[in-house]
Structure formats: C-alpha cells, structure tokens
Length: 185
Ligand SMILES: CC(C)(COP(=O)(O)OP(=O)(O)OC[C@H]1O[C@@H](n2cnc3c(N)ncnc32)[C@H](O)[C@@H]1OP(=O)(O)O)[C@@H](O)C(=O)NCCC(=O)NCCS
Image 1 (spheres, rainbow, N blue to C red):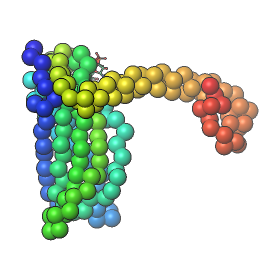
Image 2: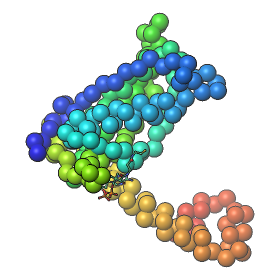
Image 3: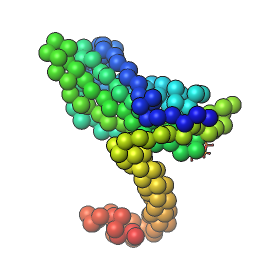
Image 4: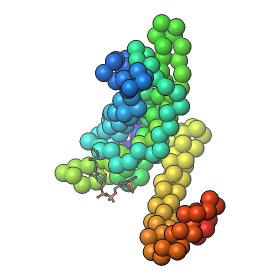
C-alpha cells in the first residue's frame, strides 16, 4: 500500500444552508453541521485509504458560533493521524454570509474513521508528514488516542465505584459540591 502525503489527503466540501436545515430558532440545526462533517470525514478517509471507511467516533464538537440559513458552509478536511486501520480526519468549518462576503470559523471537528472490508477493519496506508505543522498534528492525534484510552479506563473504574456505594455514601457525595472525581480517586 502506497504511503500518502498529508497534502494529497486534503478535500473541501461546501453547501449553502437552506430552510430544511433550520432549528426552532431559525438558525442552522447542529445536526445538519454534524452530517456535513461526517460526510467530509467519510470522503477524506475513503479517498486516503482507497476503500470504504466507516465512522467509529466523533471527538467532542463545540459549536463556536451560530450559522444562519442562506450562509455558505465550507468544510476543509485532511488526514491528521493514522493508526493501523483507523484514520483521524480533522475538519475546519467556516460559514460565509454571501451578501457581505464575511467568513467566520464556526467549528473544528475530529472524526475517527475505520477502513473496512466485509465488515472487518483493514490496514490503511502510512501518512507522510513533511512539515513541522503536519508532524505536530500527527503527534496531537496520537496523544488524543492515548488519552482517550486512559480516560475511558478511569471513567469505567470510577463509575463502578459509584455504583457499588451504599445509600449513606451516595447521600454524602450528593449533598456536597466538591469535585466528585477527586473525592472518588
Ligand atoms: C468501527 C468498527 C469497524 C471497529 O471495529 P472493531 O471490531 O471494534 O475493531 P477494532 O477493535 O479492531 O479496532 C479497529 C480500529 O478502530 C479503532 N476504534 C475502534 N473503536 C473506536 C472508537 N470508539 N474510537 C476511536 N477509535 C476506535 C481502534 O483503535 C482500531 O484502530 P487501529 O487499527 O488504528 O489501532 C466497528 O465498531 C463498527 O463497524 N462500528 C459501526 C460503524 C458504523 O456503522 N458507523 C456509522 C454509524 S451509523
């Protein structure tokens, strides 16, 4: 499998948001933006891997500013990190008010995609990072993956502890506001 340079993985998708995308406040529904992010991640990862990739996980997504109906949403995606079968896609989302040509950054999203064949994960190409920025993005992806694994073990441990407490302990923790994770560790 031929290794690919980060530059080759870049892809842009764009869409004008219509009233079909509106929430009850008349702004763009967050789910419409998530769907576009998912589509972009799918296109970037499948093009990179040379096979179909499925969505394994979304990293936390923060909506930094509302998007208005009629605005142009542009999603710029690239492969930031790869494991053996997984591909992390980073997507920058901008919204442009077309009449005034003013653009705002509204979102940065990271999605982990997995290359599959017959429903089973399969190996993806290596990613060649040439610049310092690309190498830092790769290392950040590696760090996110390690911290995710650590956090998930720790969360599971603390939730087990919580569920095994007797009623007096539950009432004790419930009636004080000190950071719960620190009290449980
Ligand atoms: C994603 C999926 C293929 C992973 O299958 P699996 O049997 O759990 O595979 P593995 O445990 O061998 O993991 C394969 C890779 O995915 C990564 N992965 C799996 N679950 C993950 C998660 N929740 N978050 C981040 N990475 C994940 C693993 O770290 C591994 O990466 P690596 O090969 O680069 O080291 C499987 O869970 C699946 O089909 N999920 C549904 C996907 C889907 O339908 N998405 C659309 C939702 S509607």
